[in-house]
Image 1: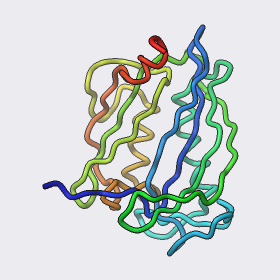
Image 2: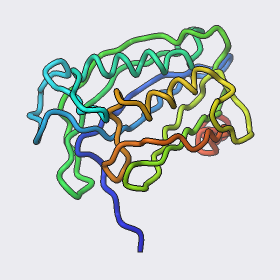
Image 3: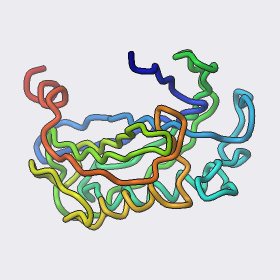
Image 4: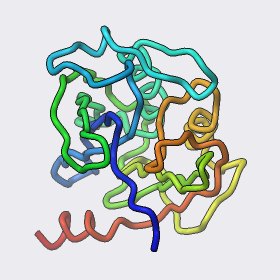
Length: 203
């Protein structure tokens, strides 16, 4: 039987808005496991007062780390109106449980930087191998980049390759569900997100 993995020890929930031409705006939520300042985090603690443990050792302020991540993501987002990375939330999880509690929020409000339009219902799923042998996935919805063919490094889209390089690099703080760091990039799986397609066209 496969080992059950839990979120945490802390988790970032990142909210971003996409607006394909002629279609309504949707808000998406990405979730990333992370280890911030040792122990439980007191509710209300600001991002600027916390640090992120990095794979290569050392740490960085949580607000700075989020800003660095946003700088990578915004390249994959359309600069058309209402395509923005909006804000992040920090959640604390009880050990070996799915019980999460809200800690604080961090305002971002950064627009996409690429002139191409957002593609409705597309996804770009990047997959990684973790140090403990697990698989970590990062899924970017409704960027300007689409396709249907599996891609391996070096990726066709430089912006996606930059994201992959960061995630396996020494300055990454994201964790797999097994709470270990990703260290190897496996592949990109672009395509259509079926749930999002139904939400856009069958709601």
